[in-house]
Length: 168
Ligand SMILES: [Zn+2]
Image 1: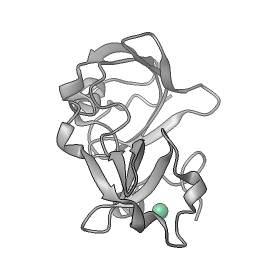
Image 2: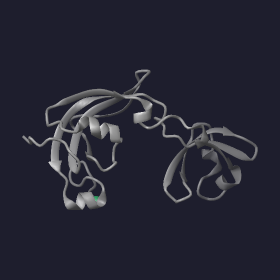
Image 3: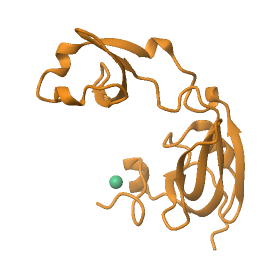
Image 4: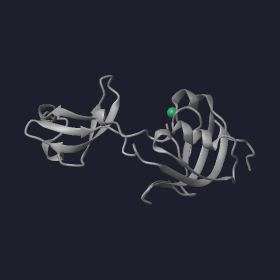
């Protein structure tokens, strides 16, 4: 069994549950299909990486991150009105335009961004670009299942290869 301690540029496998304040489980991974990520490169929340730093296989964790250390506070400036006309092209058929629909959008630099529809007007669509977990206090509970050094190729690609990771 690996005795490596978790530190940046290590591939970490965990089983965990992520619960929000009202008790709803919003994410989880079990022992059969662990969450695999590279520690310390921004694949996960920075404060989450910090909490796991130094843990080893077999260690458990149980901690809370407030919204500011999680996915951030809700930002009212990220609720924006978009002209309805931009949804009338071929990319997004009109029938997906409904309240709570999540639209694949892009920011001004072309990065993918999910927007949740909160209001549909005559000629505008009000979209919430906040992360779905923004404003939520997060409770993580789980166990470290594996720790190994990331390969150079994995660090170059910014993701885990092999079983449970990217296959290519
Ligand atoms: Zn790759």
